[in-house]
Length: 137
Image (cartoon, rainbow, N blue to C red; front, top):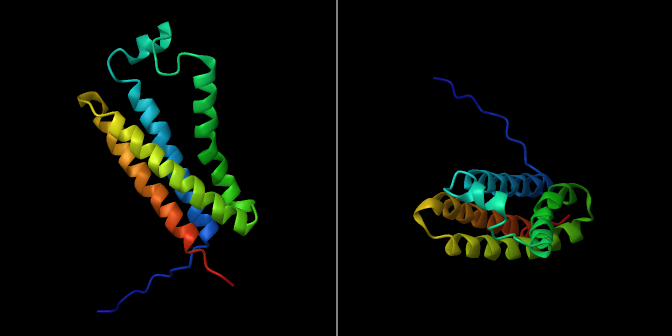
């Protein structure tokens, strides 16, 4: 029997970080989308009875959740030192942020949210690890 060796390229840390931030964003989007299936959620959105019931709360949530979206691009184009330290600091912040969201969402209808929060925390921890271990020249 012959063995086939598959080509394996070393992936640049910038691409890894960008892909990881993208994965985090997909988890955030899926969590918010699937939450629409929770009983009474849509009615609460329509009548204003929800967690983001005032303009300031809505702006803060928008601001915070825009950061990972921006990090997808920043990871590819910003100065390496800036990218490294932004990924480390924001990765740590989002690890705790999403872990807290998961713990505070414990209920039968939010098991999916807890799972995604746990997964997001793992991904952001991996972001911190890769940024911390950024290869030197």
